[in-house]
Image (cartoon, rainbow, N blue to C red; front, side):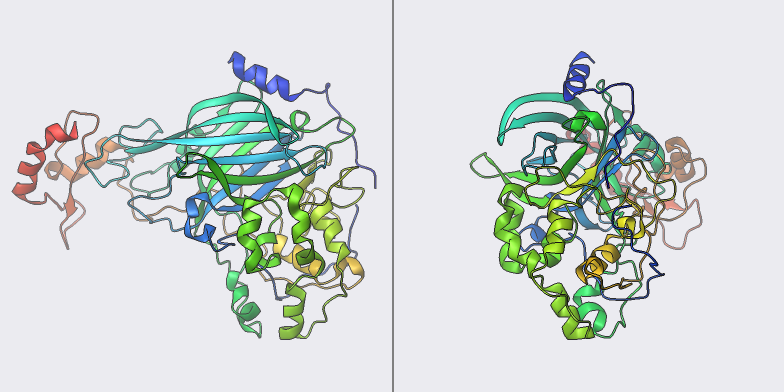
Amino acid sequence: MTPTSRSGAGRRSIAALICGSLAAGGLAAAGVTVLEPGAASASSHREAPLISGTPQYDNTDVYAFVSPDKPDTTTIVANWIPFEEPAGGPNFFPFAEDAQYDIHIDNNGDAQGELVFRYTFDTDTKNKKTFLYNTGVVESLDDQDLNITQTYDLEVLKLRNQRIVSKTKLADDVPVAPSNVGKASMPNYKKLRDQAIYKTAGGAETFAGQADDPFFLDLRVFDLLYGGDLSEVGRDTLKGYNVNSIALQLPSDMITESKDQPIVGIWSTTQRRGANGQFHQVSRLGMPLVNEVVNPIEDKDTFNASQPWNDGQFLDNVTEPELPKLIEAIYKIKAPAEPRNDLVDVFLKGVKGLNQPPKVRASEELRLNTSIKPSAKPKRLGVLDGDNAGFPNGRRLTDDVIDISLQVVEGELLGTKNDLGDAVNKNDKKFGHSFPYVGLPTAGSRGKTVKGNTTNSVRSALGSGVETGSGSDDTTLIAASAGAGAGGVLLIGAGLLWWRRRNDRAYY
């Protein structure tokens, strides 16, 4: 199969993005049936010993796809901080300030990044004398009642032979969408999310903030592959959990090498500043599943700190994978013969004729052919079901990578047809039709919202039980009396009021 050339009104280069910012059927498997519950693997959540203890720096998943509503652009979504419990206050889930969150682009197949899009974050706290994340109803990202806010800078780094040759800022002090505290605090969260979408002068769009975890799967695989007898299947373990997302949409011809070479490799990393002031890579993710169920424990931390051009050291983990042997031991499904060169071709090089660069160096990257048009009706099994716009040609939010990967691992491409899967076929929340596409995060509190959804109406309903100050950092301290009606609000004692007034200077 020969990749289709992308049509359009000429090509642009990464220089256009920089200057603009400164100025302002391949592998179709016939007869695939509806999948029955089977054994599966898991995604990159808490995948290595060291990173599992520092979730702010932990990559969970990377997605890359030709934008369905803007087919001349490529969208990349990279997620961090696994298993965010929506009600996990009072600190909730900020991005780390001592980290560099990077998205890497390899546009010639040499396993080296030619472009790096780097996000760095700053945090501002208006009032440090309160434990509250927000001190009232938040109606906009610049609302004074949003006590803790974050902003980020976005830079693009151009590299040659692993060395930075230029660095340009694309966005400065862009607001981050906050954690979704609850419906009372943030009655219109979509409005806040929309306000966090930023368009650069060079034609890119960027977003950072909380989102529903888009990965869908049954993670009970770790209990002897679903209980050892398939008694544990069919429940989306990540339902109701959030992640921190970074999304970036770029004109595709800004990241590809040329019109004749439209394939890019994509991965994300996190660098953390050490005690010596230097940054060290602590997390890395491209293709799903690799570091979680392909690499053994002894290699996991090393992989997170390594670079794609050194992936030869992990080759045996792919050619002699552990998972098929476990499936054979537990479910008596015979493992395919080794060495598994079919897995190398699909997961380390890309599918020849579809998303494999002409001069490819085997490495763990998510490879996308940007010239393949988006599917009008995406199929969750992607390339296995004749949909060449899906995984493993990039990764869409709707792609069922668990079922796809498992079927390939169990020999689908070697003639061993199978319909194995985890019986979780779609996400619990719908995805958007436009950038940033990810679902809205689950709210921390899902109780009733005071009618009117405004700060004034909330204070009015609370009545005299709320003391409203004139300063922008004023904090409301109230408590609902037990068993009281809708308007039953009790000030926490006269002593609290005295304490509050005494400490006004400390507040302001």
